[in-house]
Image 1: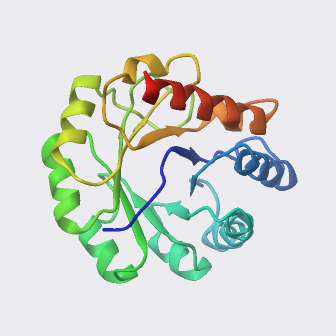
Image 2 (image 1 turned 45 degrees about the vertical axis):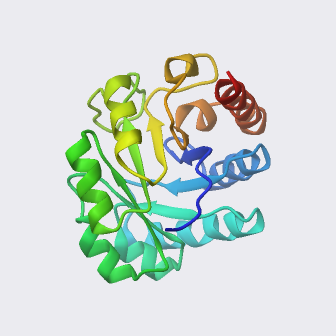
Length: 211
């Protein structure tokens, strides 16, 4: 089992941003304490996705933070990043693991205990579970209760991260649930100061864990 720090997991969103501003936001977030990165690009061509993944990976390496790409195993291989995150409608975990090999990271989305157990059996290294709150991203989300989140956390030995509309002011709903960390998008990517936003999220999460 890999040792992964998913305390503060950033899913990127480049919507409406120039490449320069996007990369600047990602680096500021890394400076603020992001511990895990997922590059999510639904609209780019394969060539553009690979090129951007290489640029983001260079930043991630500088801060010793793993980078996975959303959905695209081919992009993960071509850009030589750390792995991939697959959803329920994407390539099965088992196949992604076979293609990428045992050393790469494979994360998966799970919304039920059976889905979580299946992903674990097929070789997932961590899980993303949500949405806990409604989100402002363009991704279609289905709400997941905190009760289900807790059940999933207790059912598998790998990190389980909560995702969906989370920010530093609403983490209290996760109190007492043994999550591996929190996944955020807008709370950092739409912040005027991504570094300060990341620092605030880390502080709020640390207080949650202590409480």
